[in-house]
Image (cartoon, rainbow, N blue to C red; front, side, top):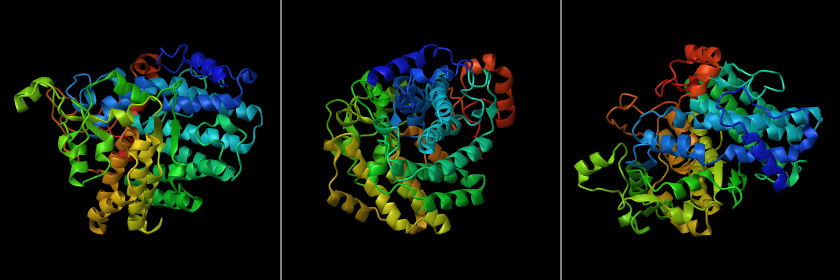
Length: 491
């Protein structure tokens, strides 16, 4: 199977240097050449993607904008709100030529082969996840016509409005959840995320429904409540066993781990380190280590301010390098076999707590808050057994940092921010939705935003030339293709 998957992935990457949408499909008239099960595995790996976009859109931009990471390196544009169009569009470039092209082809093949509904449901859930990342990051994007070059002869897909994309994604999740049972999918072991466990896929569909439903809170509070209610009633994640992630291996490396291996510039942001230090958080020595000697002693872990270059650093502190500051703990986080995490039980618990605060649904807010903090700390063992945190330490943290009903939404959202470290797509989206934690913007000389935190990333450059009419229509609907234009749900 590995040879077949490798051949498929090589074939799909041929032509990926063209960042447009004119070649968004493998040939779906030959489904027998590659089994649907193998295509599912490829989709799951394409969703995790590679170093290219994890480095650029994920880490260079979002991790620094969200003040998990900081650096003096000039090409880390997100740290300073400068603009590199190729970096900003890197997820779009890779997802449309990989995950989107493959999942659309997979669904087409499953329909042609009259596959069981449960197989189609799993593919549809993955499709929703991929598109949700794209639309949350960019706003209006090709959706209804994307990946249809061979299937329907659409080489220049229109950009669907985000409001319409969201309505369809939520429908897809509702229908997919209804099609799943408690048995094992016919995908079997080819499902490298859940091993074909339909019950876990069902809980994921409802958990993603909860996530997307809450995204609507600023534009349609009634719809947000309705979808959250439906998701909770359908059954969401119940433990860390339900975490939606891909376990990487030596033949399929984790893209973020590859970033840490290739780039010595990232430091832990002062904002993040201060949060961990002030709460006496037991995650601190797991997530951070001093660059100079690898020390994880709390006193040695100093966060680096965002928005500085080397000249500004020297003028401010007299230092010429950042070796005495904390960096992501390479001993824990930089293994090529590390998991890539997409949604966790901790996030779901925090969303349940929020739903209870807002609408009185989802179970007791304090209990869900405590469950979220506990799960966020326990989930670190996915990276390494050395990342285990003792139950007593978690209990001590909760005792020292108890649920605060008077400040509930901010507290819940801030813990969500901490729990989504390295899942920066979700960090950025949830921060825009809630406004928490309160991040102090930087005002680096020559920045593109007037010293405000960006609200989206921009489209791929080729679209302006190759798909000009549809690109212009998207701009006319959404607003200028710049970092400060807000997506529909962020109004």
